[in-house]
Image 1: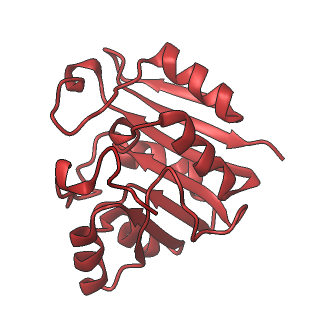
Image 2: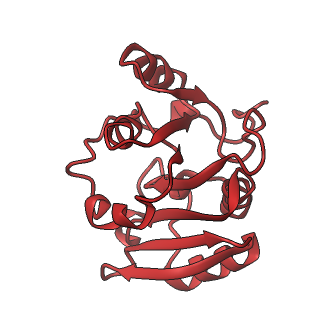
Length: 181
């Protein structure tokens, strides 16, 4: 897997955000409380993985920054090195839910990343996706910040069913999705 062909973790920032302070996380979490096995795509050092594990989930994370994987493992978190565009080490229909929190905007190909999230999630599974607002479009480590209309289209093309949008204003939103059975 050559994840550095177009973009790599060295162009991105090390992520060690606290789930207790992540925008809209705690309000959105109830959507996946009934999902025992959760994948955090773009997990940084696995703080959300740890948070989910502490609430009884079996949680795993993926990141394409080896220094995040190393730190996560030092902290005892189940995080693996993988690109969200090709999670080849994860079998299809394995997880009950996926989380893409502040990660899709780092994607060189959001449709492919969403399709991979769908692939690794069971039919009837769920997904939570957070996209920041358009003020973040020129952030040096963001590639694309889809607006609500674009996200609806991407979700449809990826075969994900839009269940709800929590519009936080100024095109910042949480998308609650389902994987068709």
